[in-house]
Length: 320
Image (cartoon, rainbow, N blue to C red):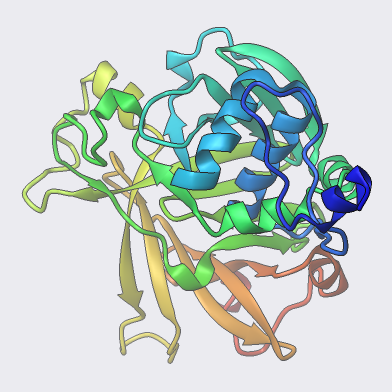
């Protein structure tokens, strides 16, 4: 049996420690561009290991045994990282900071090692690269062992912090996880739910909100004048279930109210799962009337097909 044949018959190729060889997996497995958040984290790790080696290969090797951990870091802790929006996403196979990280800006991914930018790539090009390098199989397997939203090593491995009123990370609804698409305002918009965050992109700007549990005795106005407190929590929010009161027009949807950590006025945002045109949709609503502001779909094609359409079973501001 030739060396080539033996190599092809292996189900999983082993990435030797510190090896600079390409990662190879079984033929026939392919990725689509519609990746889940866990698949995106896995794909970035495999792609970076293939292209840049070093730290990323070490992380990948360890992750194949221990699973992949993605933690969220405030950008203020990474002064040399200037590209991308929102959080810096730390990548490791344990709770320690490996130095491997990435940032996002819409579909552009910026890849770093110890705050040194190694390169950037779009999601579409990354998927094409992984498919042509027979790396789709390892991406899918590794995605099964990805933990999103773990605390960074500044919190000593706990999801809680020393921030007053914080009881740790809260969970987004499992049924909402993934990326949803909208063209309701004649502009592409997306919202992505991970286990502990909501990432909203519109007009080229991305805002990532981290979900936290709040101590019931905390007054949201306690730290109005504390600039340091606001700086650490400005991208935090609480999440709670909400049913429209019976006194308002009948609405049987179960909403999730996203309310800013330091917000003391207003109603926050409301998200609910619903069905339109026999397709699952995510409703974004707001205001005192819980009016529908946008309808998000599971694919960009569906979002564009129904862009701007008003649905008779939803309530819009112009109705009141």
